Image (cartoon, rainbow, N blue to C red; front, top):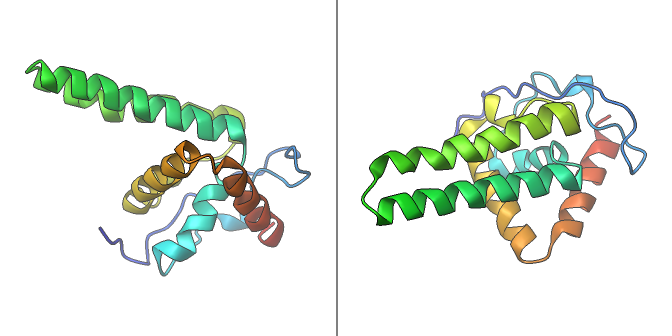
Length: 143
């Protein structure tokens, strides 16, 4: 699924110093547009710069997926709502409370969904350190 490049991100609000010394986000990112998913990806990862945020995303998404699959296997279609409710219901507060930014979903829903899937696959493959490095690099270059 492709999203038009004119989609705005809500950007992130400045927060205190990050554990790596970089701010959690830069105010200059408000209104940033992306021409491709490949350009969006480092920004998306930077909006998940703290490990706790990434792990909360993973836990919420996998829990929502498990509840959805369980419900559908039992013939209870209403359980399909568990994936977005539990997934976003855990992820969004992590952005507000841990990262001190707005979820990238607000400005780029299709690319954010793709980013969630890519980030979770990388984490399950043991590549969380690579995500942290990508986030730190983007933040250092875009303060």
